[in-house]
Amino acid sequence: MNFDFSDEVKLLRGQARRFLSKQAPPAVARRVLEEPAHFDLPLWQQIAAMGWLGATVPEAYGGYGLGYEGLCVLAEELGRVVAPVPFASSVYLVTEAILRHGSDGQKAVWLPRLVSGEAIGTFALAEGIGNPRLTAVRAHVKDGRLRGTKWPVAGGNVADFAVVVARDADGIPGLYLVDLTGSEVQRTALETIDPTRGHSRVEFADAPAERLAAGRAGWSAVEQLLERAAALLAFEQIGGATACLEMATAYAKERYAFGRPIGSFQAIKHKLADVYIATELARSNCYFGVWALSSEAPELPLAAAAARVSSIDAYHLAAKENIQVHGGMGFTWELDCHLYYRRAKSLALELGSAAYWKDRLVTHLANAGAPVSH
Image 1 (cartoon, rainbow, N blue to C red):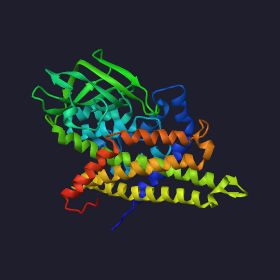
Image 2 (cartoon, one colour):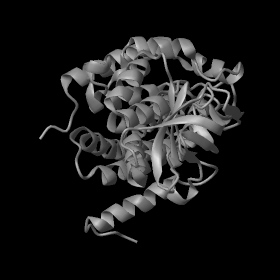
Image 3 (spheres, helix red, strand yellow):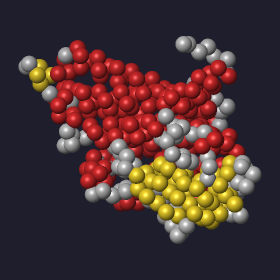
Image 4 (cartoon, rainbow, N blue to C red):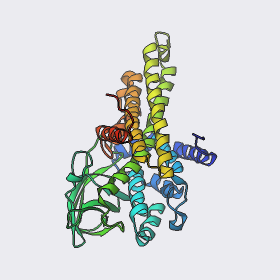
C-alpha cells in the first residue's frame, strides 16, 4: 500500500513552492495588512493563470483535472506563505458546491469563470457567531427572492457571487446562487484578527436567487460540503504549522545566549519537539482525509473531523511556540510570527470551531463502533 503522493503530485508541489516563494513572500501579506486591501489581486490572477483554481474541475469546464491530491498539496503550499487570497471560500466551497449540486447549465456558466479567476465565489452560511447548525439558518427565499443577513462571510467583500444556504417557503434548507453585485445586496467589511482573509456582513433585500439543481438539498448536503472543505483547509493549516516550525528552528540555531545557540537548551528543544509531533500527527490525519476525499470513501466524515481537529491544534501550538522561541522579538510587528498567529486563529474558526469538530469526531467514532476514551 502506498501512503505517499504520486511523482506527478510531488512535482506539482515543487513547482508551487518555487512559484509562491517568489510571488508570495511575507511582504505580500503585509501589504494587505498595511494598505489595507481586501486581498492581493495580482497574486490571485497569477494563481488562476497557473491553473490552480480549476484543480478538481473537469477539462470540459475549463479545469485541469489535477484531482484532490493535487489540490491538497496546493492548499498546503498556500498555507506555508499565508497567501492573502480567497482560495478557500472560492475553491473548497463554492466550486465544490457547483460541481456536486449544480445543473449542467449552471456548471457551464460558472465553472469556467471560477477556473479563469474571472469570478470569485463565496459560501454564505453563518448568521452570526456560533457553529453551523440548521436552527441558525433564518435566511429565506420566496418567489425567487432572498431575504436575510449572513455574517461573517469569508471573502464576502471581494466575491462576485455567493452560494447561500437559505430556507424555501416550506422551511427546507437549500443552496442558492446569488449575484453579490446587485443593488439588493449590501456588504459591510468586518474587523477580524486576520485582515489578510477579509470577512464581511452581507445583507440580502429581495435579491434574485437561483436554486442549485440539487433542489431541496437539505442540511445533509451542507454538512457534506463542510466536511470536504475541512479536509482541504486542514492542509492549509499544516502548511502554516510547518512554516512556523521551520522559522522557530532556524532562529533557535542562529540566536545565541550565554555563549551558545538557544536551540541547545532543553526548554527550547522540548517546544520544538512538541510542535513537530503535533504537526506530524495532524499530517497523518490529513493524509487520511485526502484519501477519503479522493476515493469518495464512506469514512470521509470521520477523516475530515480528525484532520480538522488535529490541524487546528497543531497550527495553534506551532504559531504560539514560534512566537515564544523568538522571545521578545516574536511579539513585534517587524517579524513575521504574527502573520501565522493571525491565520492560525482565523482558520480555527472557519467552518466551525474546534469544539464543533471534536463533537463530530466523537459522534463518528461512536457510530463506527470504535472505543472512545474519556
